[in-house]
Image 1: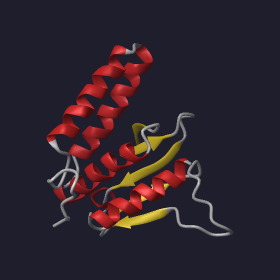
Image 2: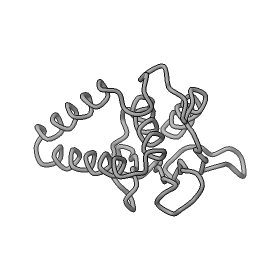
Image 3: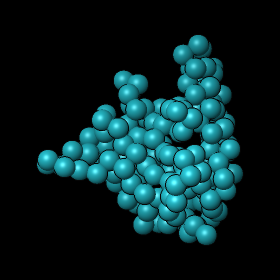
Image 4: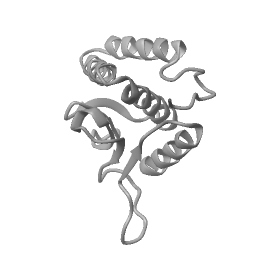
Length: 149
């Protein structure tokens, strides 16, 4: 079972996080056509997370909360049916690929070429997420801050 985080006290989204996401979607819709599109994209990503198997959903929810907390400038959408996070230019920085989608033994966090993870002549762009813990949360937060920096 995934470790509980100190932020939520649960294995997935807290009630406060769910309320904040609903409020943000309402704000986006209130902005007009462009905001409504962003709200619809956010809802599509949340729906994709909700459809995941429980063990994948818990990790995806924590990834989602951590990414948006670490890089609030990112927008959320789906990409090939998976939650993805885009920079202000609309380019995908990172996507969450759940294990159930392709029958793999672990979910992955996959960075795209818009991410600034460059480190010499070779660097990792995909990270296995078999479980969630405070240490994993810290590493994901560091990676996303570097990726958007």
